[in-house]
Length: 584
Ligand code: AMP
Image 1: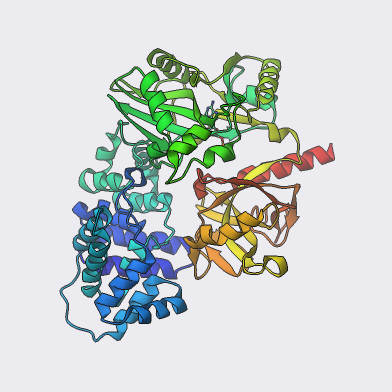
Image 2: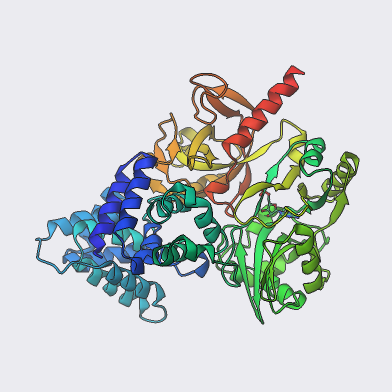
């Protein structure tokens, strides 16, 4: 398969503003791809070479890519840099500069060539590696057409930004290999227990739906976490859980999936990144306390204040997500582990067992210590008992409780948000203090004191049904000077020329972003607004819902993917419950 096909499909995907067209182009591309290449093509569509949890990234600095373009085109570095200053995009610059060079007859570039070259670039390390990478990329660009060069240059600098979500690829795979969208659940399950889209695509291409039905949980392949729904009153929770459930403290920390095989421990985040290096102390604690030879255990890790012995807030734990100074940080903010679930133990997949059965096995394979414990829990069978346990949880400084179903149906539903787990948080009790997790989709330039930085950000909620984002507010308050200075840098990797096809909005911000960065926001109230598209036409024709007086809570939710943001349904629920309260 020629790489030209991929480049042309990328161009089409990038040029459309319609999400349906995007799925069509994707399906066409998948249809044209031979089975032995489908895995690689799926990763390349997402600007990657491997699934995220493998931790191999291409990430070449733009400066180095400029040198490669210069070698490939025989133009000076200054000329290329100058052009980059104009276009602001290494892909566009590579395209333009290659177009200037006289066209020559070339051997077509194959997808397998591009992939293996990028793979070598990604894995080259050590002394002399910078020169080697520059030269390899130059060789690749010399063999590329201008359009191919555009996407190679973007991929290698991690700026492909097609914004094709996992769910869109699953849709396209279901259409091409599963006989239509109705096969989505089977394909999605295979993805949920492996987190590896390329492997799912390969399985489908080689053995059809039957092959992916046989996928099972394995140590080393992270599963996509089970998520909780939310309710606002203990009455509703008790009704939903059939009168009995296990209520557990909802710790304000970071969720971690611990994979153990012999003496080897790997940690994955809620977003399925490999975070083993960030938490050497957690690795040691897990080795010391998990007795099973092979296991996949879920836990919440919380930062501990060594002086007072109290839990520290989540923001401080997030400071441990860094590349340097990890050991010092581990001393300053040592971690506590709270174990809460087990999906695999001693060679056995436990996802089809009920929660009490899984919990029992967890109890058998873990020894607890001061720093590694089970979550606090209570079996509750009445509204009063739940209220009481909730008060206790809040007094202990947690966010509230998570209520878990205990019946035979209470299996582990990887990757899905359902009613088997229900969160009941402090905020729901006061209508002025609902925090929501919103995605940045655009920005407006600042004026006056904020000249040179963003004045406000355009924020959106998520719609799982259509896999799109709808705007709900402009966020300008709650940022420190440091936040304001850092945001343009933080958002640079998401910047695109025009509205992303997954974003539905009436606003025209100065700058657009691929939905990526998630921020926690607190608002005074939710009102009807003609300006925003969240809940559009649900309550009044032409109007949507908006958050009034939004403020950034200073919590960057790097642990959340844009698809983990607050959903439209959650906002509608918050809005209707408020109206009910006002009316009564
Ligand atoms: P949220 O991020 O608001 O959707 O809440 C769900 C998150 O709560 C999970 O992803 C975990 O990180 C966290 N959490 C804290 N304690 C528990 C617990 N006992 N069981 C499950 N999740 C928990």
